[in-house]
Image (cartoon, rainbow, N blue to C red; front, side, top):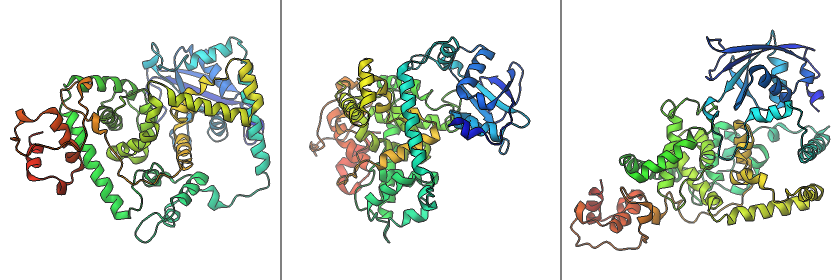
Length: 483
């Protein structure tokens, strides 16, 4: 298949100039201390796996790394993550030579990701040492190849109409809305997204529908008012813990989340940087995850940053990303339960599907002792977010979300758990259980010293809603004393 993709417009031998650096720039420039290696390869016999081997041997690498090539038309760096990327680089960017930037991730030289077993270099070195690929991997590759060939055969001779191949655009989106902006049939909208995806500029609009952010039947203006109110709520929640950063709970939560945020999609231009201080988007990701963890039953778990990252990138707004993250976590939060019941159920479902659709593969995995499919854990936990290049992940996620059943939202989306609102200088283990129906003693003198933790929490949901029609004068005085 690869030979048929690259046999046209590629010379027999091309030159490759590889520049090693630990600093990611948007252009190629040789500085002092940066190593350069020049290679000559036959592109028809040098897929990405072979290029990896050559680079590892040429630079004697022992850590994670990525490769990017220089586009001749835009002079931008493009990440090489699969053979198709490399094939494009061979065909369009190899004259007079293909310039490649080798980015070495020095921050993880001595410590791996919690769920990574070996580095990229380790994998390549194992292959270079002659270790044969396992028969399980060969079988998986063969199955994927068969599926691809089957899909290609079905597509031969069929010219897909342009309206089916291009993503959903603004004019087409409006056909799903009535004159007031209400969604006429959310199912039809989901089908269109499932079949074609969405234009990147529309994701900030469409994803909120796919994630069931809005209550059913809102007009366009009502959706705007709804988001404005929710954004104000988020800002109040965030400002509360930011004004108490010396609180041990906040310090502990920030420290835990920052470790993950600092390595989440950092090689993508939206999050790129050497620290959390030099990229406002990284700070926004940290803020929304901290706010969520401090105000929900489930504390932060590794992987939540991977789920929030695409949302922030698509929304380009911290408050909107938090609202979408709450909607997403209303479905996925149980994945992170310590008892593991939900993940076990998902493994059981996956096993049943594999037995039904590919019994031969399941039988082979069972003979090899791999039928529990534990290697799929990250796939199920993060809905395949880390298994594709970032831009492809966005398309994959919206197609996946559009296939979910429609949820008729009778009530407004919750941005916090009533029983787990953050209270400054209170231990997690001391958070009182309470109900929003607890009454406030109207005779209580509204002084800071006289407000008990229980009454303080009781007022927080009303304060967060910013709905003054439901707050009487005595409650407003108490709210003022919370600051």
